[in-house]
Image (cartoon, rainbow, N blue to C red; front, side):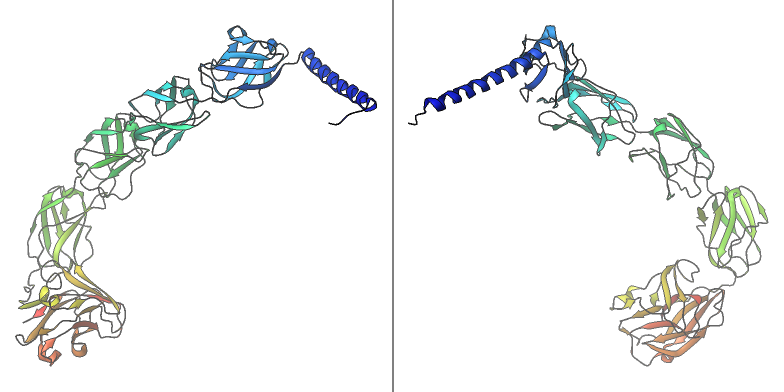
Length: 521
């Protein structure tokens, strides 16, 4: 044990008494100054209805305590306890996160930190259905702590019409979709709350369309409900939606029918991208052909077309000839037109007023004096490359110096299709059939029909069997079908047929021919 002498002990006792006196004086000076000080408040995680404790100095001067939120002020008369160092009060239900202000005669004292509480929001009901732009009401508890509402497909709203502890009013976004809502609320622990009920967002609906049928580029009147919500109209056959309307209201929408419109449903699209479709088809007024007389016809003479809505016809296209736009006569039921020279056998196509839609005759217009298609024992091409060629392991395609379209629809020698060959370079052979092993023993001739497109006349094309060209060369005749019957002995001495080329042999290219009715006899 350490012993202190009296010479040391006396100064130490004096020093200790001096410190205590200074501390006591400092404390008395703070209290006596009359300054209100907030040292702490809590506890953290309190809920509305809990007792909240404020600790400080001169708190007896506080006349009220104001929390963040509507009607969230507690007056002095409602304090449970108040002294210079402590205030106890019941936490109001409308309190929100924020700073706390102590009201005093000498001025406001604001907390240095924000007050937060532990809440669990609930939803008891929501508006069942609403239009975009309308207000909906959400009812429940602690809704004043909600800081965002997310509509279906992540449409987030952070501004509210009004907000209270038991009710939240929010505007439905223009692009909102039907679905549940997610409420995000804060507190000591923030959380998301998804509603059990679904908000049904109103969509525009069609009840009728007039006139129906309608002519292209004329006004269509759509009647229905909530049509003022329509942002786009989609017509059948039209690639781009219509976004500009003649007029628009909640129960009527007037729109000009696009030139490419075809018979079909009309679809409305809201700002959300959700679409509704008409129950009935919108039909369009189009010309139709009943008869063509005479058939067959001699080019250069008059053709009489009968039908309906023929007064809408602006052009008539014959096979292998430019469209005719000047008629001998025209009415709603009859058109008389001069058949152009150089035309080929095929269907007739009508152009329509204010429309990009065309109308094709069901019947083929035959040409007087045209020979019937040749008879073929073993077809190689008959609207397509036939199985008696391809089933043996043959192939189509490949080649060089141009392209071949095996599904061309005009002109046609037999059936409904032919092969269009576009030669872009000299000695090219875009049409090639190969890889087969067909016995030639039963056959003596090879048949092929060739039609020369404009600019092809006089060019040379070589028919080659088994990759050997320059055995049979033909001169292209422009503007008509020419049928060729070629002895197989001039094409090959082989007993089998492995491939066929239809090769450009003028050395120039840059022209088109059509081939059809290909086979062996």
